[in-house]
Length: 264
Image (cartoon, rainbow, N blue to C red; front, side):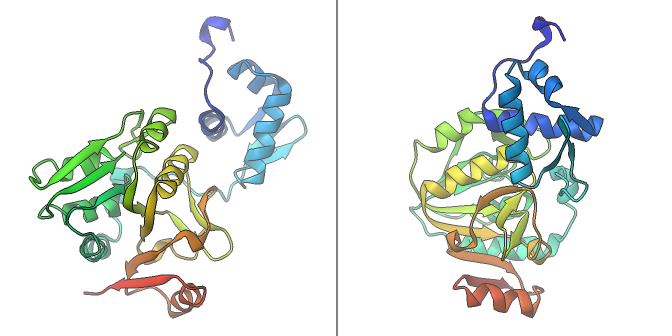
């Protein structure tokens, strides 16, 4: 690859995300290739691969790496919109009830968080900071809601703004609550999602808020994805649907998580 073709310097987590994308398309990659593609030393390339292996994303091979076949897929938002629709609508109504007039809240991009936003239109003096274009669109005609859309790199798969610019913007705020969608909730692995850049945005929202409300339908509980976000104990409230298994419900409540069930 010529120097003109080499990408600009990217932050570590952005580079890790690009490595995963490369592995999805070509199945394996070598340390030497990574060094050339990203214009980094082979030592840095090895450290990148070691970190991705630690996170469960890849498996190291002699001189390189391959993608783990059990890695969760980063399903596009338009595809996710069609699953568990009724449950998401109920979760959205219940989660919105937990938001008070006059608060400042983070809402991240996602199909369930979009349902929460849809239920916030009648709130008064509410400030919503979001990285989700779909969330912003839901609130465009809500007269009592001020919406702050963070900048960054646009991810078509999730209609979200991610990357260092989005993260730096989030750090400028303090919120009463963060309402986040999570792809996988596991007693052993905590909160995880498929994409490194999305995980980084969620981490910043959690760090800059007083209370974390996770919204996730029952299909997300008991699963693990490959990008770590936070331990379960960071959750103040989990809003899920009433179809969650008794086993999972009991386990979550046993460790002190407040689980609220959205019924019919």
